[in-house]
Image (tube, rainbow, N blue to C red; front, side):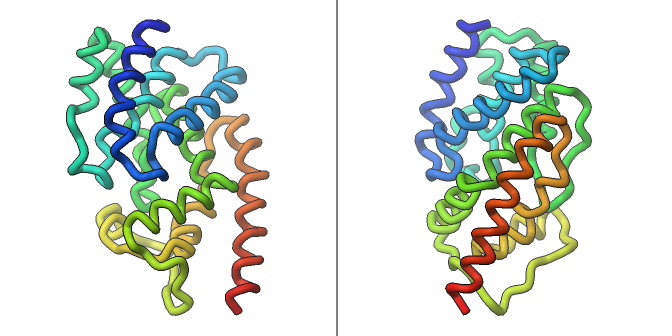
Length: 208
């Protein structure tokens, strides 16, 4: 297992180093640490599936389509993953994306762990930093007092409109606490969520 994971990490490092700071290799490493915490409370989960899914979950992210060098399936083949292992990893990865609130149904505990681990890195202090890093990389405004957060949208609408960074908190980040699946994910999300609320309240006071 260790050899396969090490080979996979070496391969993905080349790709993630081309992404901006919101989705770089540091993000992957933080998600891995979150997953490791949750794995301790989910003894029935397949650790190899979880670790490979974490390493590969952003390889084909639509936000970085021009930087793709290989498909996730191709990379799994290159590290020697069996068809069953590849299928389980792909299933876990498909559970991760938010898509404007249109996430795919979770079909395994591994998918639940990877989703929660990734979403934990989207909230709290690091979530705040990542939101503004991504917004800065895309030339988005810090905030727009005239912009209303959308309460209902399709996946394509969510992807197509470039909202201000603070609006993104209301359209996604503040919703994630209540979308956690694992008990440990739920526990870890609460403190991070509360910190974001404090930050946004302080930001509002400073702006006004």
